[in-house]
Length: 202
Image (cartoon, rainbow, N blue to C red; front, side, top):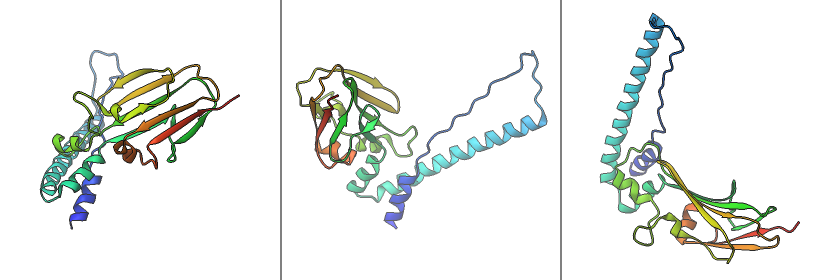
């Protein structure tokens, strides 16, 4: 029974709801047909139903969380946070070794959470990678070992944030070494915490 509850929690995340209207007529008076009114009523009803479902999920989760162990709660919370490490648009492979045939590229470390969550925020935050220092960030779980010039650009949004490590005019044949913590390694599902990027010779 407990496993079924946990599985249900993992599935009960409302992805999103966007509603909008754009009047197309430029006339000062807009006539709404009976069909338009029916569609409006149905839309309002759908919104109300989704809001009720969301509240039901929240109530269910609050009950289920009370009977879960701390380890089970952490497992659920971690599923709300997704981390990725890419070379341009390519995911770093499990063995941590990747080649690139250009001298300008970027390494992108990103964090993504749910647009809408049905668990309390204090539970949700349990699944986030912890800062290693006060006022730090998840980027502390990643470092560039090689003495190769680069600069950093950071982006921050409500759902997704990222750190982009930008390399330019890197000599062909260079090897750039990266290191990640065991915590980030687990989230990325890599087999190693050491990453090597080989800039191929022409």
